[in-house]
Image 1: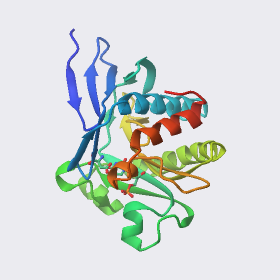
Image 2: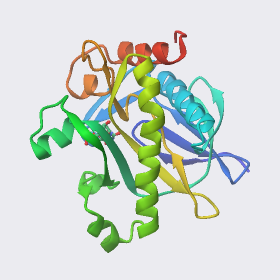
Image 3: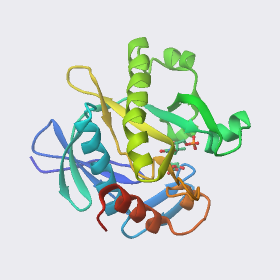
Length: 237
Ligand code: TMP
Ligand code: ASP
């Protein structure tokens, strides 16, 4: 069975493979923000995000948090398990920033007393709005058990990644996760974990080392991603 393009997103392409249970993900050099309104190509971004995502998925796997990741294929590609994506973005926050700062009026950088989890509706036409649990019930996007499980898994990822990043002098401000249902109906961590989907600040200077550099026209986007990779792995890309 020849491979076919299953889906093209803003930053990745998904292809079928000979094995119906597995997909090939290709990380693109495209950068978008504000629901695709802002767009650029950044040479090397696909390679960096593929490598950083692989690093995080492998690290989480070693810490009893499985994901869809199966193995690296190439500089810009990885093999993943095919799952049915839950149309919710699970955002975990340790520190006020971005849309939370706007919504509740807390300055960016203010530490939250405890991590919080929010759900956003994965729907480009609606602009990925924040959802209350009542809305998730109404739309039947997840069951009660799944909502609890998504929160639990989001916080578990935070518990593993926050100390790891702290060791690398990186402050984990917030991040977005996606989950999919596997054949048995279990929730499996999916999509990607990269500077496109997390906020990373240098712990000393507060410098942004993530996609906010692109969103806010701060420059040095790929340089910052490269620095994240270097701090995580000790290697240069
Ligand atoms: P926000 O403060 O803009 O709501 O973003 C919260 C986190 O989610 C931040 O780490 C960036 C990430 N994120 C995505 O991965 N995709 C998105 O479309 C948005 C808006 C945020
Ligand atoms: N990923 C989204 C977009 O491409 C939004 C963002 O990350 O800011 O528009």
